[in-house]
Image 1 (cartoon, helix red, strand yellow):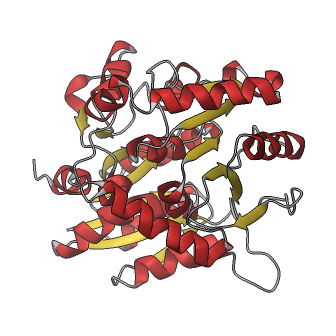
Image 2: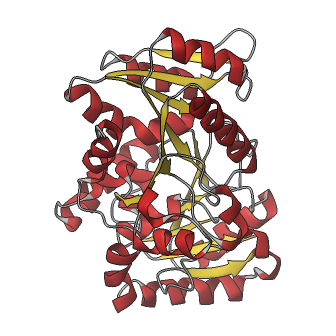
Length: 351
C-alpha cells in the first residue's frame, strides 16, 4: 500500500511521525509532501524545521517532497501511486483552505483521505472541521466527536483514535519523569533541579511587555522562569530570563512546577502531564475549552496584572488536584499509548 502524508507546513508533519513509524513497521510505503510556499528557504541555508522533519522521515526510509500548488501535488501523488492521503487538520484558516482543496482533488482522482485532528474544536474554529471533507476523521476523544456531530458531521465518518503525538506520555512513573527532565533542563539552561521551575511557552497572544510582566510575577511568587519560543520568534531577551529558541517544549513541561502559555495545543501536554497551567488568551477569538472544563486557569491578556496573574496561578494549582483532571483524559483525550496504532488501522483499513 502507498500512503502520502500531506501537510501545509513541514513542522506539522512531525505531529504524524508516530503514525509514520507504525505504517513503515507494517510494511506500508510512505511518502511525505509539504507546501514549500509556506516556509520559503532563507538565503544560504535550509530552515531548521523542514530539515529536521526530512531527517526524521528519512531515518526510517520515508522520502519527502515539496509542492507549490495543488495541481503540482496531484502529479506527485499520481506519480507515486498514492492510494491514501493523511492530513493533520488544524484550526488555522489557511490550513483549512489548503486541506479542503487537497481533499477535493483527491476525491476527483479516487484517492481515499484521512484527516487526523491536530487543532482544537472550538466555536471559533468549527468551520475547520465541519462540514467534513475527508472520508474519515480521526478525533482525539468523544468530546471532539460530539461537538462535530452536533454541528452536522456524519458520526459514521468519525473515529475516536486519541492524539498520536502524545502516545509516549502514556505510562511511566511521573516522579521519575520529572526528576530526569529537571536534570536535562539543568544541562540545557543551568537552572538548578531544586528550583521551582515555571515554563513559559510564548504565543502570538503574548507580546514582549506581557512576557516581561509574566516573568516578574512568576519570580515574585518564588518560581524560576524560562521562556521557550518557536524558531522564528523575534523576542531575543526579557531581562535576565533565560530564552530557549526552537526547542521542543515537552522536556521543559515535564520538568516544570507551573506552566504558562497561550491558547495552543501545547496546553494539552501540560494537562496530560498533570502540570498546573495558566492559559493567557487574547480575547474571544482565542477561547479554548480547558478553563471551562476545569483543567486550566484562564486569563485575558488585556486584564493581566501582577495580582490577576498571581490569582490565576493559585487557581491553576488548585485545579491540578481536582476531579476534573482525572476525568479529562477519558472525555477529551484518551492517552493510552495506542493512538498511532488506531490511526494506522484507519489508514490501512481495506473496505
